[in-house]
Length: 166
Image 1 (cartoon, rainbow, N blue to C red):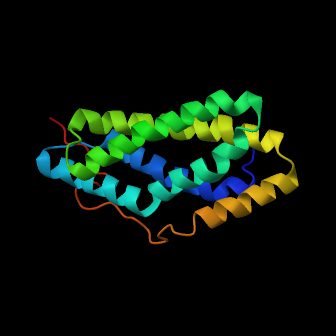
Image 2: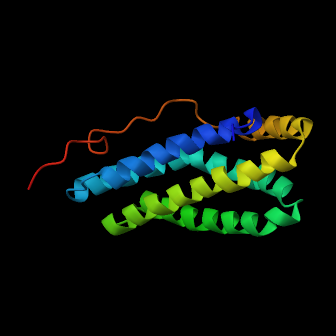
């Protein structure tokens, strides 16, 4: 299903986060310096975008979705995942996320995003009228006003590199 314009700002942020996940999954973390660079990038992305994204979903999207009995369990699951992901982002910021946790984090974040896109967003588009979606979109835009519009680029250690044959 084509994404309704009301949800596109959240979907764009999902694309940014999925790109991060792909880069982590493909990365060869060669040592502590690489791991430190990943932690810093994850912390920066959380500070500049994800924390506002989670807040917008929790303040605007999730309450609206909870009005539908069919979505209550899904929303509760997604909210619980936000808590786990916040812990992951916090560990990255504290410098305690290790190599295995980094990969687990990327899988968790990717799975979470795909669940929101494929299940929650699709159902919201099916259940809400055009006018209700438009109103929701305005509320989402307002909730995301604090997001830093600058483009986050990978640093030298976190950009994709060719694999080194062993």
